[in-house]
Image 1 (cartoon, rainbow, N blue to C red):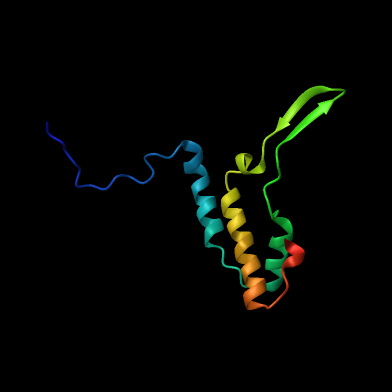
Image 2 (image 1 turned 120 degrees about the vertical axis):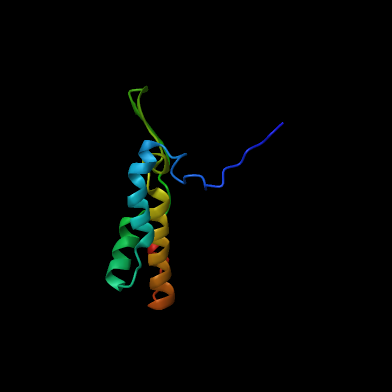
Length: 104
């Protein structure tokens, strides 16, 4: 029984789907944003929700019309947005010395 291994590293994009390949630049851009402005940090904390909204069932007169999945399944960059919100909260709390409880 012979096993062969390649001396070339595996392509890191080989296992990604087409959707992931298209969204990857946006994910990298969101991860690279450095928060350094107090007003921008406040705005980001207000715009990005603190937790993933739960899924909802829309019913009319007892009949199921629609199921809205949770935001984390719809939004392909949800984890990166939460990371950006966390960096904004950290900047406001540690660098600016603000109380961040209004954003939680």
